[in-house]
Amino acid sequence: MTLLLNGCSYGNSWTSFPGVNLSKDGGSFYRSVRTTMEWIAVNSKPNYVFIPITFVSRYEASKISLDTAIEGSYEAGDQKLTAQLSDTCYRDWDYAFMNIIMFSSWLEQQGINYLMWDQCNDFDSVAITGFKALEKLKWIDSNPRIIPLFDFCANKYMYKNGGKWHDGEQFYQPSVRHYVDSSYASLKEYLDRYIKQTLNETIDW
Image 1 (cartoon, rainbow, N blue to C red):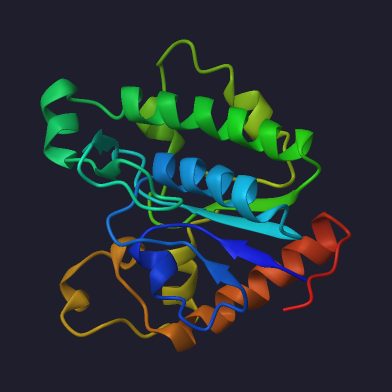
Image 2: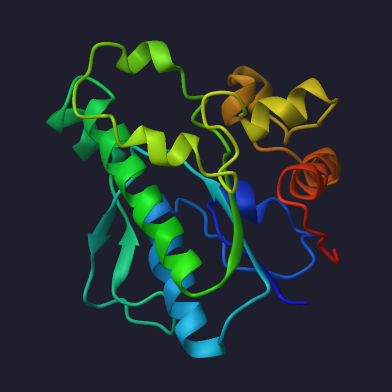
C-alpha cells in the first residue's frame, strides 16, 4: 500500500510517516496540490493521499531558474505580499476553500482515496462572519474526506495530547508550533480512527 503525504514543514516533522513524504519547508497548500498531481502523473496512483493544510496565506512565486522533477519552476511565496494585498483573511480563505473543493474533486475523479485536515490555521468561523460569496463552504462541510475545518486543528490536537515541540517553539501558539516526530503518534491514531469510523476504510500503516 502506497501512502502519500504532502504538506509543509509540519509534514516534514512527521519523519516516521510510513510512505512517500513530499512535504517541504515553507510550502503552500498550492504547492501540495501541484506536486501531488505531478507525482501521481509520474508514479501512478497511490492508495491514499494525506494533505495537512498549511497556512492558507501562503502562495507560490514563479522562479524559472529552479526546475526540478516534480517541483517544477516554483518556490515558496512571500507571505508579506499577502499582508500588503488585504487586511482581512477573506481573500486567503476564499481561494483556499475554492481550491480544496477543486482538488478533492480531482482526486475523486481519479479514484484516489484521500484525507485532508487543517494542520495549523485554527480556523474560526467568527473571522468570516458576514462575508459574502462563501456558500461554497457547503461542499467542504459535506465532504467526509475533509475533517471539519472549523472543529479540528492537528497541531492543537497534538498539543492537547501531550505532544512535545522543538526547542524554542514554546513562545508560539500551540497551533503553529513544530512538534517532534513522536508527537505524531497521537495524530496518526486520530486519523486512523476517523478513517475507520467515518469512511469505513482501513489503512495499512
